[in-house]
Length: 175
Picture 1: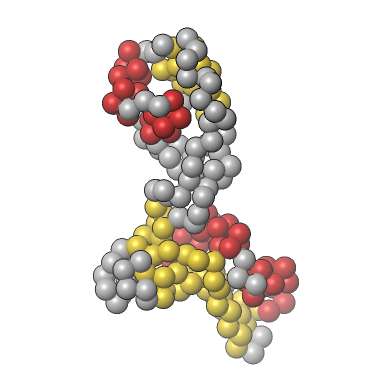
Picture 2 (picture 1 turned 180 degrees about the vertical axis):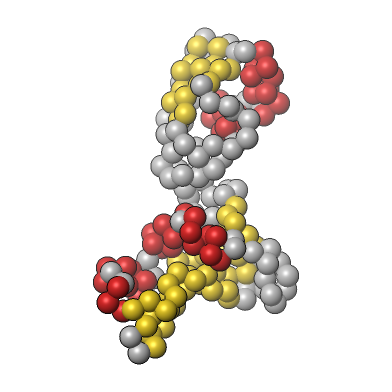
């Protein structure tokens, strides 16, 4: 489950750093009947503000009033929704870094001493994570040990466990 907004990867024009953090603040500008809206992000190195375009030259009547209210209220939930939108990321040429922005809820450690463990992983949000890292943290193993269990056939899953996943999956661990 997510714990905070992900870092925005984009080059800062002021200090050439590559990381920004979103704090959920918006800027809305009206020019007659046309609206522009931006999500504001702050450079982690110098604190300079950059704008991610959300709406560009939209007619006021075509924007849903509840969306406009959420932007005026600086809703952090809306910021999270917009950062997950692939159209917004493509338009603004940004990428996201989810490192340290999520946590694993295992429901306790009483399952670790069993011979065979069937685990179903459910994501609260579509956060791309490496399943090997997730399994290592959840089962109290090292990532090298998880890799060894996969090659031995003691850790099996219907999905490929190398690479990144952002959807629900299951796996079985035999000790």
